[in-house]
Length: 280
Image (cartoon, rainbow, N blue to C red; front, side, top):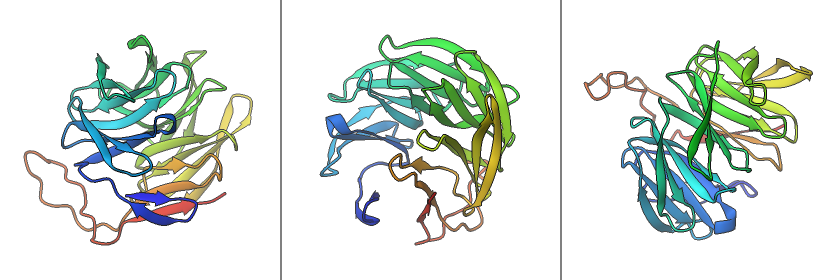
């Protein structure tokens, strides 16, 4: 589903993206990319027409996806195969695969050749060189547990990681350590950073958006908790308007557990999907 955020109108959809998890765009290439978790593929599409250009085979269960402008490569972060598939954004040709040593979650690129990704089951951030396709560093996030969402402030070399034990860990990549932790709501999945406002955000499945600010050098505080809606746990920030977009829906009871899905998620009630817009 594609929405024009200038007009708030639905302008189309992108077909054949089974189990889609994430999306990345490369405006200079007129390309968009989705990670398709059920198909173990990435879809390449035209940003203007929304027509599919091609498919790329990835590792197992691709989740997060990003476009790195420094290398002009796309990275899919594959949860079950615990690696990243890297391909050329213009041609779709696979450049390589890197083992990550754990289950990857959200990722971010600094635009200068560094890519950072949360590793959920080891509570780490892994730093990659997007040009050389190599793991450069690993940063421990303790006391953060099971990091998922990630916001990046490349100017100040800081990563804001949303953690399942209800904290946001602030990692200074120059110092190589966590310099602060801030309480957040329960059920975080997405994080973001707005450089224009100097604020970090945590979207929490309980139905809140935690707003974090650096109140003094090296000291971070939660300055607001915005009520959103249950399930609104992923997010995107518009750097021009500073609006935050959060998808969610109304939920019914979960289906019965199966060997394939021992912990099934609640079912989505038909025609209840919405995009919440939080303004500044």
